[in-house]
Image (cartoon, rainbow, N blue to C red):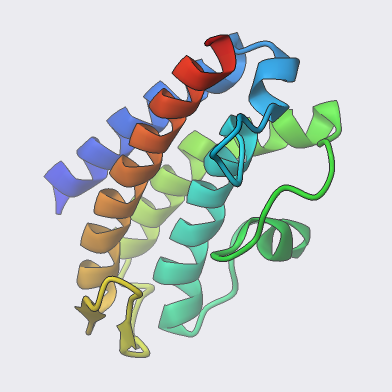
Length: 153
């Protein structure tokens, strides 16, 4: 599991650098042919990890609930974020992975509600959820890299 946490943290550091270095207008631009922007993708990975790992384990998410609806699966950007929201999500990129590691090591995850993803992958336990989340975050990193090219294009 340690390697899985490490991989997730490395991906999150990349996302953090993108969030920090990308001008706000580029973070928010939705290029033709896309349904979302860089900002939405970054916030979405934070929210999805919380839903897959914590909510499916019957636990409360560790981020403010206000982020769930706007960034859950199937949502699209509805408004420009406040500067403090960008900073807060940026902080959660790293802290949520550390919390997940700590909570896993202290055996917080005792239950899990089996869930079949839209990719037809059935998650039977929290380890499955963490592994699938890493894959999911890689998909969104790819989307962000494509968005970066498109907004500069």
